[in-house]
Length: 245
Ligand SMILES: O=C(O)CCC(=O)C(=O)O
Ligand SMILES: [Fe+2]
Image 1 (spheres, protein in one colour):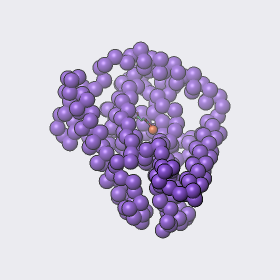
Image 2 (cartoon, protein in one colour):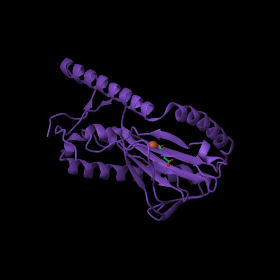
Image 3 (cartoon, helix red, strand yellow):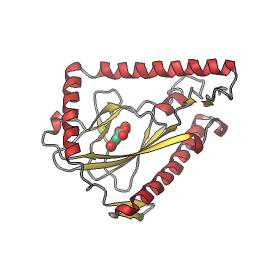
Image 4 (cartoon, rainbow, N blue to C red):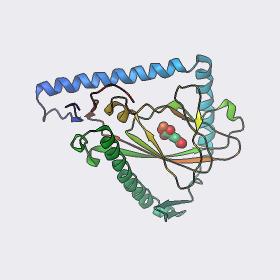
């Protein structure tokens, strides 16, 4: 177990030595993101990458023109209907959804820290996080083979929660070339590990490349919660042992 921890870089609170360390870590993380971008560029053959870009633009143009309010009919939280096609209650429902999601992710963080042997004191807690809810809509696409819903990527979160409607399309990959489609299970949330957990765990939690493909049969919707430390936090591995499982 190492002594490194998640540090808050507030210039007036830390001494010169820590500032230097914070700066070094920032540079390391920046380099890591650069390497990640290069990794993905190399994985995608240039022809596929360029046509995918074109088609992604095409697809998102369709998505925009179809973007009328018609997606979410109801939101159930813990089996209770919290929103039922009544816009005035939407923000309350979303707030409740976000609060419940944060509780769930904090539990997941505690569990994964326990698994990694990291003491709880090393976690910055819910007050130092941002969470974002993303509502995604993937309309029926007449030529799905020429389009992509979301291009391959990894999430910058610690954990991401994905609630998907009964239309599949979310796919994960171990090697960036073969893709596994996440099965549709009603009342199930897909939990995705993000880059922050990858860094904190010293790569014991692998990167989870994923994408969303579209189809010509059924409109897909998803509600995605990204949860990550606030931007000012400098992160570094909390597990020193570099031997991966
Ligand atoms: O919409 C989805 O199913 C997944 C979205 C996603 O991967 C993301 O927002 O990072
Ligand atoms: Fe994602």
